[in-house]
Image (cartoon, rainbow, N blue to C red; front, top):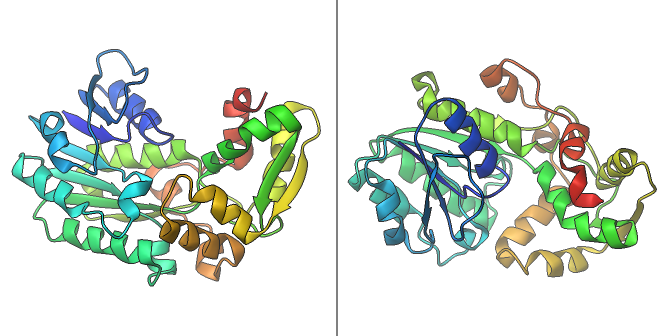
Amino acid sequence: MIVVTGATGNVGRPLTQALTEAGEQVTAVSRHAAPLPDGVRHVAADLAEPASLTPALDGAKALFLLLSGDLHGPEARPADIIDLAAASGVRRVVLLSSQGVTTRPLGPSRIAMRALEDTLRGSGLDWAVVRPGGFASNALAWAESVRTQGTVAAPFGDVGVPVIDPADIAEVAAACLLDERHTGGVYELTGPEVITPRGQAEAIAAALGSPVRFHELTRDEAKAAMTRFVPAELADDTLDIISAPTPAELHISPDVERVLGRAPRPFADWVARNIAAFR
């Protein structure tokens, strides 16, 4: 049995589906219930309280660990989850980390994530780490404004990064959970092309068949919006990247193709599959 945390999110949903289609028994963990594939067990738990995971881990052979935004803060103790997994008999953990661990190692949230990677390496468990860059699904933050105002509002409109489709992250994670050849692997995951926020707005407009205006936010305006959902440290680390990406953050990684045998999906593919959210 494989436990998927964040199972109702943009990565967890397709990962749960992929594992189910591979014939695996899956326990989906989230704070709240949501529709799941037939046969998937749901356990409500809050990773900020690791003990709440205990019922989910009973009998599990593997764990996909995805931290919610609040677990990136300075007071969080996500290493306790790895200790609990080991004590529960879990043999393999696949961690969703961040590209910024290597490209921005001194950012507060990146220091904490690197420490968690190090804890996993020293746990005695089989492990793999996936380090995605920016998510294509972050564009869902614009869905309401596109629907109601025909507008995308974002900072740094002409600065791009190679955003990754969460479905590609999920497929790589599934491979790491199911195939022992990926034990000890660290995979940097990006999309196939650099795309700016303005370019993303144009892709949404093309899929809708109607105009979408672009409104550029200041950094302060963007941070105020982000900190409604994530700690200030994570917001600042993210804004540092998308305002001035380094050459390493602009690099198109080959790792999706190495693992899956195909190129990563472009942003336009993600938009086409999710266009209903913007209508």
